Length: 240
Image 1 (cartoon, rainbow, N blue to C red):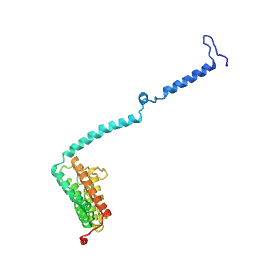
Image 2: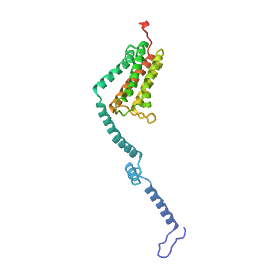
Image 3: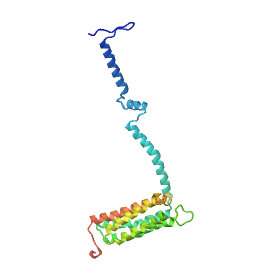
Image 4: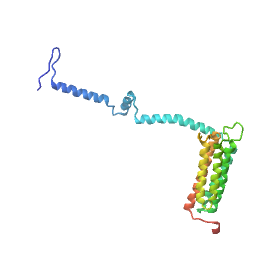
């Protein structure tokens, strides 16, 4: 056994007692610095240190998302309800011919190229009309859209896309892809501002939502026609 260490006024301390004290100190520090395995203990420990667990972060993100997303959705829903009934009626009515083509093909389990050609011709007319909306929006006095080069240039892009698509009517699927791209470009131009082209988002909020709704219907109908062309047997008017 190692000789004890002793000094004046101090109790006798052996090397074994020093090792025991050191081990106890390390154990105490480990227990203090290590968070409890219990979830509540871990949460309290992290809170004291200013840290956050993954569950706390997820909860915080969820609260922030709800506080921002829900009011925004409610505000947009209120704007959607402000859509004038004639605009909603005629907008949906204009999208009906697009949807009728793939619906009829699916019902008959047959792909009709002539119906697809009619859909392309009608789509070219509607896409040209959408280009004229921005042009007309620049005409009134005091309009936020001025007849600048950027505004008028983007207004004639959809008609040109429609024209090129109609030139490819002998290849209906290529024409459909061209029209789909034209509708997407027209929607993006009307929804988002572009400083480089001096473009301003077009129209009130209800118009934007109506454009999104109708564009989704149109794109879904065009894709439906392509799916029918690949899935069902083709039948022309000579086969009838």
